Image (cartoon, rainbow, N blue to C red; front, top):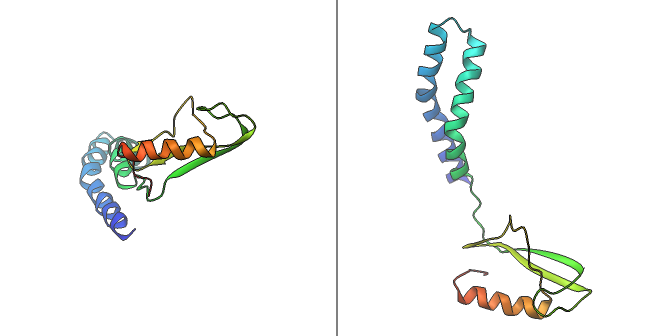
Length: 123
Protein backbone atom coordinates (compact mmCIF):
# COMPACT_ATOMS: atom_id res chain seq x y z
CA UNK A 1 0.00 0.00 0.00
CA UNK A 2 2.88 2.35 0.74
CA UNK A 3 4.26 1.75 -2.77
CA UNK A 4 0.89 2.69 -4.30
CA UNK A 5 0.73 5.81 -2.16
CA UNK A 6 4.25 6.78 -3.28
CA UNK A 7 3.30 6.37 -6.94
CA UNK A 8 0.11 8.31 -6.40
CA UNK A 9 1.95 11.15 -4.60
CA UNK A 10 4.46 11.31 -7.47
CA UNK A 11 1.61 11.34 -9.99
CA UNK A 12 -0.07 14.12 -8.05
CA UNK A 13 3.10 16.23 -8.20
CA UNK A 14 3.49 15.56 -11.93
CA UNK A 15 0.05 17.01 -12.53
CA UNK A 16 1.31 20.48 -11.56
CA UNK A 17 3.61 21.07 -14.57
CA UNK A 18 0.97 19.58 -16.85
CA UNK A 19 -1.82 21.83 -15.57
CA UNK A 20 0.13 25.12 -15.25
CA UNK A 21 0.20 25.82 -19.04
CA UNK A 22 -3.53 25.17 -19.25
CA UNK A 23 -4.23 27.54 -16.34
CA UNK A 24 -1.90 30.17 -17.83
CA UNK A 25 -3.57 29.93 -21.23
CA UNK A 26 -7.06 30.28 -19.74
CA UNK A 27 -6.10 33.14 -17.42
CA UNK A 28 -4.40 35.05 -20.26
CA UNK A 29 -7.79 35.09 -21.96
CA UNK A 30 -9.57 36.47 -18.90
CA UNK A 31 -11.43 33.21 -18.28
CA UNK A 32 -11.50 33.65 -14.52
CA UNK A 33 -9.72 31.56 -11.94
CA UNK A 34 -12.63 29.22 -11.17
CA UNK A 35 -13.43 28.51 -14.83
CA UNK A 36 -9.73 28.09 -15.64
CA UNK A 37 -9.34 25.62 -12.76
CA UNK A 38 -12.37 23.61 -13.90
CA UNK A 39 -11.02 23.45 -17.47
CA UNK A 40 -7.53 22.47 -16.29
CA UNK A 41 -8.90 19.76 -13.98
CA UNK A 42 -11.15 18.43 -16.75
CA UNK A 43 -8.21 18.16 -19.16
CA UNK A 44 -6.06 16.68 -16.39
CA UNK A 45 -8.69 14.03 -15.73
CA UNK A 46 -8.37 12.82 -19.33
CA UNK A 47 -4.62 12.49 -18.89
CA UNK A 48 -4.36 11.11 -15.37
CA UNK A 49 -7.32 8.73 -15.44
CA UNK A 50 -5.10 6.20 -17.24
CA UNK A 51 -2.19 6.74 -14.87
CA UNK A 52 -4.43 6.28 -11.82
CA UNK A 53 -5.98 3.19 -13.37
CA UNK A 54 -2.49 1.72 -13.70
CA UNK A 55 -1.51 2.66 -10.14
CA UNK A 56 -4.66 1.24 -8.56
CA UNK A 57 -5.12 -1.85 -10.72
CA UNK A 58 -6.21 -4.89 -8.78
CA UNK A 59 -3.51 -7.28 -7.72
CA UNK A 60 -5.39 -10.57 -7.31
CA UNK A 61 -3.85 -12.69 -4.56
CA UNK A 62 -6.76 -15.09 -4.16
CA UNK A 63 -9.20 -16.28 -6.79
CA UNK A 64 -12.67 -14.76 -6.83
CA UNK A 65 -15.51 -17.26 -7.14
CA UNK A 66 -19.23 -16.72 -7.68
CA UNK A 67 -21.64 -19.21 -6.14
CA UNK A 68 -25.17 -19.74 -7.32
CA UNK A 69 -27.72 -21.83 -5.42
CA UNK A 70 -30.35 -24.01 -7.13
CA UNK A 71 -28.63 -23.79 -10.47
CA UNK A 72 -27.84 -26.13 -13.34
CA UNK A 73 -24.31 -27.37 -14.05
CA UNK A 74 -23.00 -26.19 -17.40
CA UNK A 75 -21.01 -29.40 -17.96
CA UNK A 76 -23.01 -32.34 -16.63
CA UNK A 77 -26.49 -30.77 -16.56
CA UNK A 78 -27.15 -31.61 -12.90
CA UNK A 79 -30.03 -29.43 -11.72
CA UNK A 80 -31.00 -27.68 -8.48
CA UNK A 81 -27.51 -27.78 -7.03
CA UNK A 82 -24.97 -25.30 -5.74
CA UNK A 83 -22.84 -24.24 -8.70
CA UNK A 84 -19.60 -22.29 -8.91
CA UNK A 85 -17.74 -20.25 -11.45
CA UNK A 86 -14.29 -18.75 -11.33
CA UNK A 87 -14.61 -15.01 -11.92
CA UNK A 88 -11.08 -13.68 -11.50
CA UNK A 89 -7.64 -15.05 -10.80
CA UNK A 90 -4.10 -14.31 -11.90
CA UNK A 91 -4.10 -14.51 -15.73
CA UNK A 92 -7.89 -15.01 -15.76
CA UNK A 93 -10.68 -12.43 -15.83
CA UNK A 94 -14.34 -13.20 -16.50
CA UNK A 95 -15.86 -10.22 -14.65
CA UNK A 96 -17.66 -9.02 -17.76
CA UNK A 97 -18.67 -12.46 -19.05
CA UNK A 98 -22.14 -12.13 -20.59
CA UNK A 99 -22.72 -15.89 -20.52
CA UNK A 100 -21.18 -17.20 -17.29
CA UNK A 101 -20.74 -20.95 -16.95
CA UNK A 102 -21.66 -22.32 -13.53
CA UNK A 103 -20.59 -25.84 -12.61
CA UNK A 104 -21.46 -28.27 -9.83
CA UNK A 105 -18.75 -28.98 -7.28
CA UNK A 106 -17.34 -32.02 -9.11
CA UNK A 107 -17.28 -30.34 -12.52
CA UNK A 108 -15.93 -27.14 -11.00
CA UNK A 109 -12.98 -29.02 -9.47
CA UNK A 110 -12.28 -30.65 -12.84
CA UNK A 111 -12.44 -27.28 -14.59
CA UNK A 112 -10.12 -25.74 -11.98
CA UNK A 113 -7.55 -28.46 -12.69
CA UNK A 114 -7.81 -27.73 -16.43
CA UNK A 115 -7.34 -24.01 -15.84
CA UNK A 116 -4.31 -24.59 -13.61
CA UNK A 117 -2.79 -26.85 -16.28
CA UNK A 118 -3.25 -24.01 -18.80
CA UNK A 119 -1.39 -21.52 -16.57
CA UNK A 120 -4.14 -19.91 -14.49
CA UNK A 121 -2.90 -19.52 -10.91
CA UNK A 122 -5.55 -20.49 -8.35
CA UNK A 123 -3.32 -20.70 -5.29
